[in-house]
Amino acid sequence: MRPHIDFVQAQHLAWEDAAPLGLNGARMKVLSRDDASGALSCVLEIPTGAARDTAALAFDEELYILDGEIDIGSVRYGENAYAFLPSGFDENAITSPRGAHLLYFRSDARPEGVETDAAVVASRLVRHVDVSSGQWDGDFDKFGLGEMKAGARMRVLREDPVTGETTYITATIAFRRGERAERHPIVQEFFLLSGELAGELGTMQAGAYCFRPPMEKHGPYGSPTGALILFRGLGGRQETFWEDADPFSFFPTHQPILPEKLRAAGAPVPRPSRY
Image (cartoon, one colour):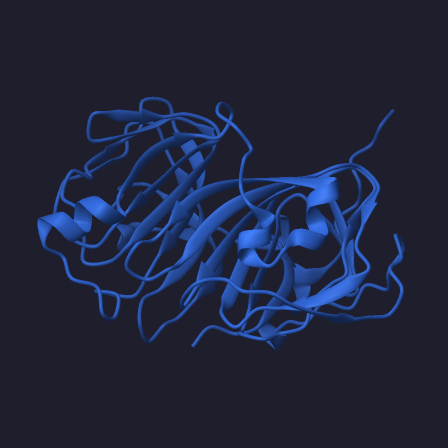
């Protein structure tokens, strides 16, 4: 079981050898990990020339490219590209022509209740999405997030036809502020791709990461800069339950919820200088 993390800044995490992921010379910053099941979320650094041989996956893999380029099979992934490679997928050889940093998410081996015959694998596969193109046409109401839509846009990257799990990106406008807190009956994790996000536990800068157990209260949130956030829901379809909360502030007390070993990684990160 992964601990409740709300929130760490990836800038404070140490690099570790990523050899267990099968990529020579790669290293990673572990965001959260379940040692019992092997499930993992990390920032992965793949050096130029690193490679992984193709083999049928024993787990689900999900990737979002932060910078650089990688090739997965015959498909090239540049900055802000996304893929979901399901358990059983076998066109997954990786090479990197000039190195890359990416968000890498791996489920435990053989997700419960998921078959790996060809039809199921094909139905779950998201081969390539270029987030920098296409429409931000996600339906906030579908996920119970209608209160956000006046100040934000959504891009759904994946809706799993078997598990119901969803991955999406939201982009908020500057000075949007929430008024109520929310809970979800599933695990939710997110990574702040850019911007600044203020909430009841402090102000997050780009590189902030959360992993919340089901029904954990969070929010309201607001952003003085606008924010771009990657969300993953684990354990089923996302629903949202809203409740009243203390008034929102753009200047919250810094008090992240973290296990003891991650306390240092929850230290504030200063705003980038504007001059």
